[in-house]
Length: 299
Image (cartoon, rainbow, N blue to C red; front, side, top):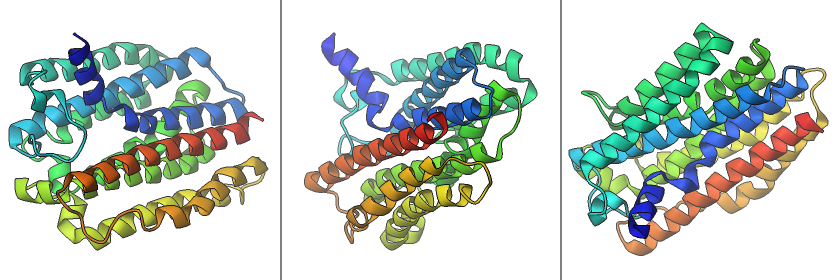
């Protein structure tokens, strides 16, 4: 039983779940600063975000396994599907349950926020399936980065603020751009690690389409953009000076991250382990960034 629970936990991809938590933290902090903090709505938004992210991850495992993009030779963490601990039917049921619970809880957010929340919720669930499922999967067309940027960035942050204040917020949108950039950085590491396997399976991520050099610069520029966006926010009157903290954090760490993606991806275990560590580290970096950004609006 412990092996089964560990398999489900691994399939949820806990090291990247900060990409779902960070936008809610940031959006809630902006809502509080704008006088509209609503704790029940914030909590519901957080749970929905995590359910949709886990559902998307399970759907990704399910459809990639069916298409042959994920095999037992993958360099990422071992999944229950490849170990024989979970079946395709079980993983399919897992993502359907996650999306179903997100829709049920989202009914409360819909009652509070109206049609904008309906659009955000339904589009999030639909794209979670279409990311690797359907006749034209987003990830296989190279559109996964755009999905990660928008739905784990400005849509998530601004939507979290909106469902509490019932008004759209420019600081939330700009902060969301930073969260989106960091989500793209996480995804880029994932795609760089899997570049050779994705190419063989016909999964045309941006890393596959444009090559390793493009992916390395995408990763670097995503981090740089996230570092500079709070400075853009500070040009607006009334914004907290504490926004310097997340900028300075990323600018200080950028030289360390600059060369973390090697010149060429490989298919050996050592390379896979290094990329898995970088993936987890980038996820923690997004969480720390979100905490500093949020603290600026709370303090």
